Amino acid sequence: MRLDKYLKVSRIIKRRTVAKEACEGGRVSINGKVAKPSTNLKEDDIIEIVFGNKVLKAKIINLAEHVRKEDAKNMYEIIEGEEDTE
Image (tube, rainbow, N blue to C red; front, side):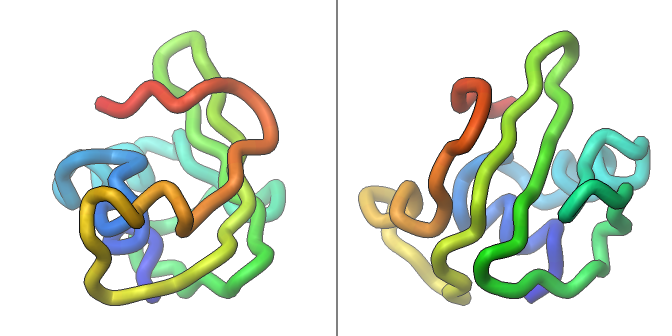
């Protein structure tokens, strides 16, 4: 699954265009490397997102195309920081 789509489906970032802009701005990294919006994700990847002066670090648990809002939090596990979506 593409990184920008995952960020939207998992509701880490609410809109795909915002997720794409964050990736293009170099604020998202996967396993320590800056990632493009089209980067393919795998389970157990570690994503790190910089929101202003906050950092969210999460481990990908599940990749799913369609998820209900209540189940979106089951797609990742927060390692560091706190969830503060844009």
